Length: 418
Ligand SMILES: *Cc1c(COP(=O)(O)O)cnc(C)c1O
Image (cartoon, rainbow, N blue to C red; front, top):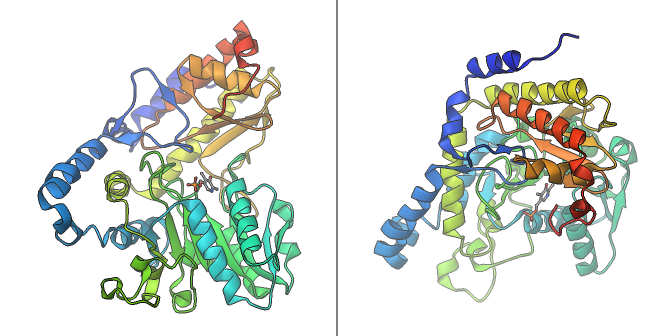
């Protein structure tokens, strides 16, 4: 294999069709930020758009803003804008609540649609909040249901006629491995089950095709690859064919057919609107809208191409420069999204000193993160990352290892957020 040099890497930057996007984001000077898979960077337009909402809309229009500034319509209007990125149609996506709450709502809806079945099928590699929400729901429903966990690769084989819903996260948050959403959905449907996909690490990272895959329900968050800011509002998808029959249990007034009639009895609105529970948080929605506008200027196929090259380059450089360090690649080496697995926009290596290495890298201005027990995660956000950032990250990694910085006492105990 030919050696990768700084010149090779700089040549990639000079030919990068997305190079101009970097300047659209606020990034501290000198920082290499490889954690956009946890919290995306801030687009420069976000503070201005939020300030304009505060001063021009709330400040001037007060309560009139709900109509004049279309605040009330934002969860669905923004959902329609997002729909194209995830392969959904108009009226199939709402931007509401949080990912966990949307899991609860849609899982409850799915179970009610399969009253004769009692199993929620998932995997132990799933993001724990999804499993916790399922556990809470099962308790709420009287303990009649079962959360059945089988290893990722065995999910399709574990389907039987007791499975009501298959609840999976498309992109594994530790390894970045991407499930075959279409294949698993097909198998679930053949067994009479519904599917609920969590796309937290998928939307904005690579092309997603919910309707192409035949998905029934999906959720995702906005603050990772979609750059909406900490705790930004989540989104949810209900396939058009289920919108009449899917009922969620958080029956707040804004999911009512006519909220301003102030009826005493709940009557669900038509379509995706019934999944809105409460008054939408406009500040968060406006930040998301501004961030989404930036992403929609880029072509997702081009974003994906760069993401693959960034990840491939990172793997090759780590192996070239730190091949003796005992890193174990736990992400798929082949990024291609061909069944059974592909790779999302993150690369993870396992190492017994992983926590210390990540912390020492952060001290050197290279931000990745760590997941128990030994996983170092590095996320790639093609809109604001340069190929040279990858070079710098690996050079700093080599320096950390040479100086033994990762073995410092300060890194013996883990912080509360890793
Ligand atoms: C980040 C993430 C979440 C986050 O859930 P919140 O309710 O927004 O805190 C949920 N699911 C997955 C798979 C995630 O990666």
